[in-house]
Image 1 (cartoon, rainbow, N blue to C red):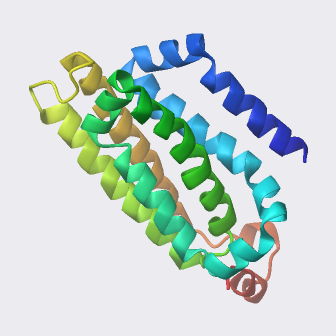
Image 2: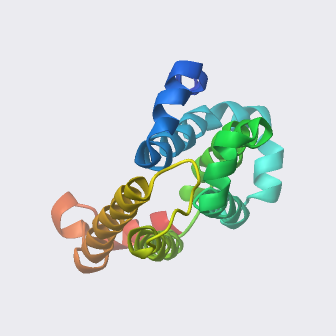
Length: 197
């Protein structure tokens, strides 16, 4: 349960007012640092909930699909410019962010990821790669403010952050489709295929 403790510690750290103010003062830190770290905190705390409510997860997320769909909905919601704006101006939305991202995105991600097949995981990565490309182009090419709380240069920087991340994901996907790990890790191909099912 050490990782649960670290996840809780990370969550408490991220919720501290000075940390919140600093990470939300810069748009790219808000989207590409605060939100992923909130997901990570929920990801690390997930074993606590999995052990506490095993029947719930086995019944409602048996194959990982419902959990990954919930994760995707929450993360897509928080990439919308208006929701980022509202998180800075409406306390209830800020509170929802600190509840939804760790517990409705991070926890389902941890419970779902290894339940998905290899191709299922690739579909999720391809979907987020496309989302990041679209959001990156939106933030880079739009000449007007999309978020009232940030300057145009901030959203331009965020856009390039999205595009850079998508490039990294494309490189990984090419590697996953081209390279056969069994040739380098000493794992028989049949063992790998069975572990993904």
